[in-house]
Length: 425
Image 1 (tube, one colour):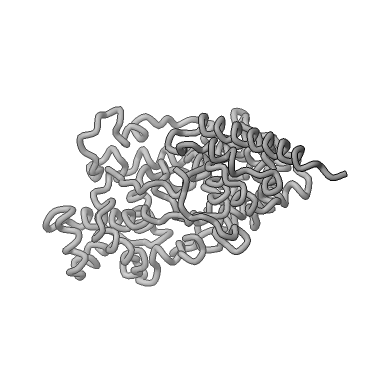
Image 2: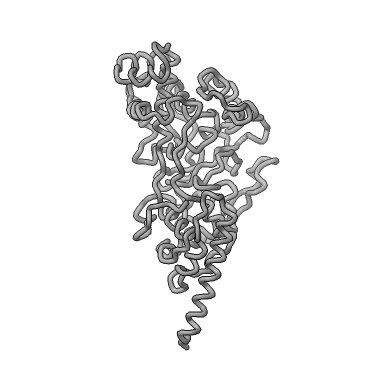
């Protein structure tokens, strides 16, 4: 039976009003930076039931979705790195990133493992520098958002995390003298370094300057906007036409992500990471009698690091002690529960960064989702993650969740026709 025009208008109006109220409530609970004037008023006019169901997401779900934006965030500067934000240092850092001359063999550069074509990873389960590693290569996009660096958080700044592989015998095997000699032969590099770091820096200061220049470039690397961002912004401004372009399977997966899956407990905010460390039930035994302690080792390493924020190479000046970035390093506490904990990675750009987990042991996104679906709680240490429960997903729910995760990467499968690129703030 066909509805009368008046009944259809009333139904559409009721759904539009429900959508407007949901959007308004969501934005009221989201950070102020995400709010947009008259969002609810526009939503009332723009949502139409034949394009996007106004009740597809509840008020709380919309609030959680909106909290994952806007994207990209504004540029940030690292107060501990005087090269941060300096255009000349950024250009030098980009050049040094691909320069094998700063390695011991003369054949390995940062880009050897952090390939821009692979989301700044290498596609291997475990990295290989001058020797084989025990861990998967982490991507570098959005590293400016991190508080700790590396799978175990063994560095407290991006520049310290950059210097470590330069000097590591397993990775690039270099030393301060080699790096300094390379820079002193490069007049253009020294014209950048000396105004920032002082005239005639010694070998160690030059090695630090190289790492800080590379870090200054890396912190400019941002994940591009994705289909999810276009959908999130459409919800925030009440644009049903745009929202309807987001794939239906991805919408179902997103509903699982922000709802029953509770994935946002760790994968929070625009970067989809809380930058903290968790035991997620992955093994940390590397071989009989050999383990990788994860965060437990990382805390010990950052506390002992000559280049941490408590050392003389920290450029931060004038900040009150309680606001200084060094506070996190000074106050971090080593606990037994840190065994087997790993950094929560961002979910952005996942399509390019397989295989997954700290040891590269899960080849595909489906394998990752299945891991959480079938999580073995006995693998978690006794004082481990109380938030984690097996999701017990059906095969179709696994596919939906993967469909959503794929829209966090820029790809043909993660696009929305006519997507508006300007983020809603």
